[in-house]
Length: 431
Image (cartoon, rainbow, N blue to C red):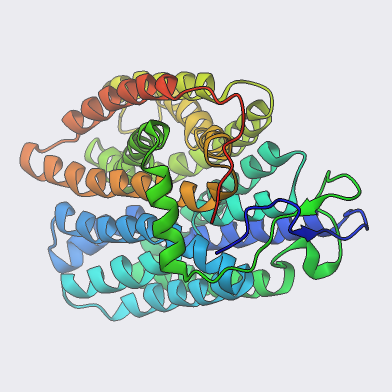
């Protein structure tokens, strides 16, 4: 068993200056490049439908498999990183993403799309999900942890900002296969960045985490548990606490209303209202611009304000914006559409820093793996929305019911968030 004694391993005495920021910068660039694939399904949905005749529910199912594996593998990936090292796991994961995205150019049947986009890319992307960012932050930063997790979380949005317009134009002018290959190439670049810039722990380079005082003690890292046992044992401990289920339920709604609904279906929904796909993709990229601002600000506030209050604000505002969306989509980007884009962008993954902060408060040293399980619920919610919204569109001819249901779920998530108990003393965690 891994020791729970916080003085089990003494940290080096040399103060960390550049290494924590080098590692954080490499992790940020890795997340930016890896975000290339997450921009692919929404951009290519109409092209795949035209070429193969698949319904949006069928394509959405492939995305759903990806999202479920992306989320459900995250806690095991966090345990694998603890056991085998961040660099090694991240490198293998990015190669898997490159293979799944690149080989998709040869698909001729829907099950092949599910296998490549769903299974292969889902397992790869799940290995460098937000638990990866939580692990990097927890190991390398004592001070400014909220701000750093906000910046790393914004990495995916930055990738969306970069890749959405590029992939959309490639899809329109060259073909959808060129967009898939570009995403594969970005994953390979991300693998090189991870290997070059990431180190597993501060002790590997003889420094302290950022902000750690002299004599700071590092928890013991040697564990006889396998990754599967570690992930399941943490789940068993967390499942006994109501806070875990409240966080998981609220975060599943977060996933449903971002990755599952807007990221997967916004471009297609806007196109239903006469908006050109490239314009809709550019609007979604602007969501990424404001998401960077919102997420970094959320990380800053998470160091200073009760995380539960932040989540109540974020989920309530998101729900109200989704109620308004059916009346905002037009053939052109009207001022009201821009208001939604800016508003939703600021709120997109602003929920992540306070959710991680609550995991750290409630689950202590188990927090990275615990957040992996909470993140799994995020992706299960996203998967349900990706398929469900496609089915609603196929059955009713539009997405209005999907927007209204999602808005109501956000209000429920706000209620769940305030019900998470305040922690006066950090819970010690054994491993």
